[in-house]
Length: 195
Image: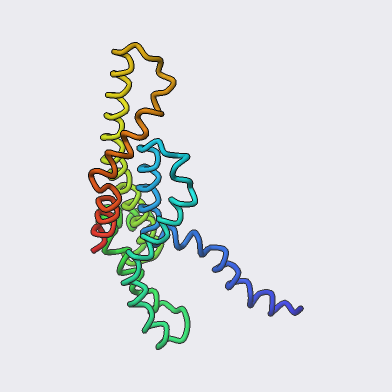
């Protein structure tokens, strides 16, 4: 094998190796997965909702959110005939639209780069996404924490041991989540946040 072949293939391998990181940091995946992980924790349903189910749901909802960006990229890919800067313009627009302007200014000033530079847009978008995800996580965690406190207080008043607390609070939290239409509320709020 010649050196040119090895060096010529290196960028493709680097891109392939970096693809999961790029998809996680330049799409809605990080925010969606943090919110669903918070929901899983809030319900205390680690056995009912395995990580594989949360990951699959996160990927599907991310695909729904990123669909319009992919549709914008498709004609550009056909015209350009490859992955060039003009093809990535819809992704850059998506990042700029959903990154907090204060975060963009911070990373631009920190690195001395233009606000449109990927080394500014990607971290600004990612920090914004994590902040929004944590805000949503708090809103998800609080009601279920209150259910846990009420059940614990009832156990203490009746004089029952605390060991079966999860056996009582888990069904109550799942019923509460289903009664309020929790899946719809969480998924609609995630998707609507990118509209």
